[in-house]
Length: 476
Image 1 (cartoon, rainbow, N blue to C red):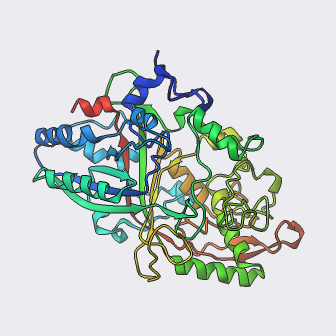
Image 2 (cartoon, rainbow, N blue to C red):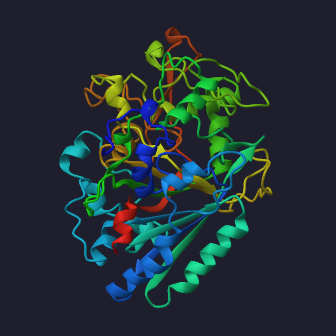
Image 3 (cartoon, helix red, strand yellow):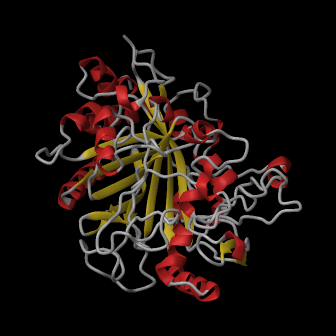
């Protein structure tokens, strides 16, 4: 019996034999992060005759692609599933291989990320694309990218070996436009990002075992159930008629992080507001560096360790006096506070984040890799996320929530007669849009102060891809 995409996580057990065909047809890393610490991302452009490119894909790439079935079968502390390989095609890549992209429901995918066109309507409502123009992207991302091949493992030598084998096989058929190198940052064995904040706490969960694991830290799910339906990330692969053959849209963005600049802006905010620096940082992110949600506490609750608290929402803080409306985790996931929108409607906007940092950490950030305190050393995040529709999920979050200075406090009046919220001070790509910060935590009567804290994160390039099903890849 075909798998129904509206199935909720509590009914998805990867050990269920009835799910095996679906998981065998699906690529890994979509329903569950692969968890590897080292990665290589190869951006490819096809250059040879189509039949020879397809033969190369069948011979070199397809046998390496990791299925979701294998990922789940080899998950666990005593298991070593080896290198995880993913293969993704852009709309231009599909067209090069001779496939019509009209069957793909996502219009943004068909156009590609370089299409930054904004209509009059989007500009009036402040929903236009705030990303840097393509001419400012890194040169490799300015070109037509046909495919992305990802490799990940806990042994960097294995990743390097596989990448070298693939690059040596391309001949004149494929050009490797760029190779991005990812490395997970850890502090006390837990993942962090370059600004030093615990990362990966809040993710949509798609399987019963992972839901049970999440309950170990948040047993009640009274305010926030992280479970999701398969339809949040999976869609029918339009280019195969085989049953239970699903794919997912992948957004890739290379985000440079300027750590000294971020730290300086947080320090300046703390001085302006007259608050502690760790509180100013938590106002910006929505959590303290140990993971404590600022809506629940004005100080870290697990100093020297990590808090994985995720069972909370923002409706009790309807004035934004504890967690500012523009704080990153609130902008990107309002948790029940979007005007005229239900909590379930908000949840359908979620994305499955699968990114990995790049570049060495600065002092005090991580303890698993050598430190490099050179401010000019490239570092940041290779942001990847899966979803069922690019414009309804990632682009909606980025444009309607994150980069919209009116969201949520004055979104209904487009800023007229009301104070603006400001854009996301962590990942917002807009400029000169002051945010409104609480003068005192949890004291709405003290009011707010307008301070412009520009994001120290800059888009360096990216593309939209689709994760084809194995039946499609095997048919090449």
